[in-house]
Length: 111
Length: 111
DNA sequence: AATATATATCGTAAATATACGATAAAGGAA
DNA sequence: TTCCTTTATCGTATATTTACGATATATATT
Image 1 (cartoon, rainbow over the protein chains, first blue to last red):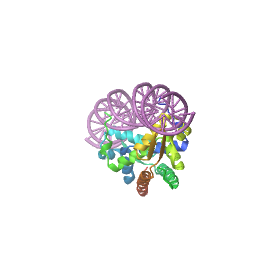
Image 2: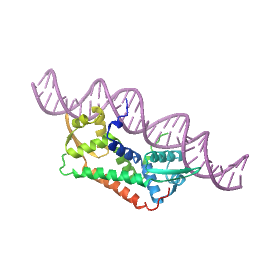
Image 3: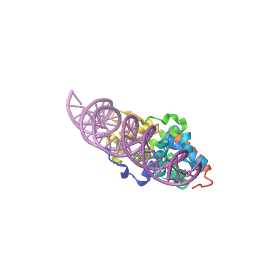
Image 4: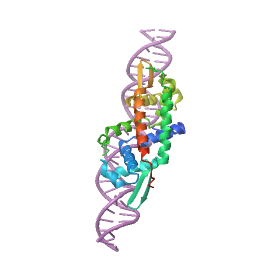
C-alpha cells in the first residue's frame, strides 16, 4: 500500500504540486521571505530568527534546494543561500496561470 | 520529537502554508481543475478520471474541504462538490501578493 | 421490504515529513 | 598544528500522508 501514484498524473500537475509542497510549511515560507529581502544570505542568520534547531533549518533549506527554489553556494563553513529567481519566477507564473484559468470558469455558483 | 512547531510562525505564513499544502498533491490539483471546469460535480465523475481508488479520492476531497478550498453538499449517495470560490480567490490573491512582493526585491542576484 | 448505487468512513500498511541531538566536515584563527 | 565556528549529515523518534479494501450509510429503484 501507499504506492506512489503521483507519477500517473500529468507532468504539469506534478510540477505544480511539487512547487506547492515546497511552500507547504510555514518555516519554508519564512525562509523564502528572508532570502528574498536580503538577496544574499547565510544560513546562520536564518537559524537565529526561526524557532527551530540548526539541523532542522538546514533540512528545510535542502528541501527548498531540491525543489529548485533556492540555490546555495556552500563553501566550507560559510554557505550562502539565495532564491533561484529564474525557477521561482517560472513556478509562480505557472501558478498564476492556474489560478486565473480556474477563475475564468467562476460564473455560476453551483452549491 | 517531531513537535508541532508550525504554530510558532506568523498566522499569515501558516495560512499560506496550509493553502500550499492543500495543493501539494497532483491528485488534488487535478480535482480542483475538474471542479473548476464543471462548476457542478459528482465525486463519481472524478473517480472515473483519476487513477485512484474511490476511497482515496474521497479522502483527497475531504482534505480540500478541510482546507476550505472546496465545499460539498453531500445528500445521501449523490454528493455535490464544488470550488469555494470565495476562499480560493482569497488564498490565490494572498499568494499573488507574496510572489509579487518577493519579486520586487529581485534586483541584484547574489549567487 | 429488498436491492442497487454512490459516497463516506474505518482499519491498516507503508511512505514521507518534521524535528532534534550528536557528530562530521571544512575552512579560519590562534 | 590545534582549536573554534559554521553548516551538513546521520540516527532516530514521532507525526502525518497516501493508499487500499472492507464496511457503513443513505437515498433511489424495483
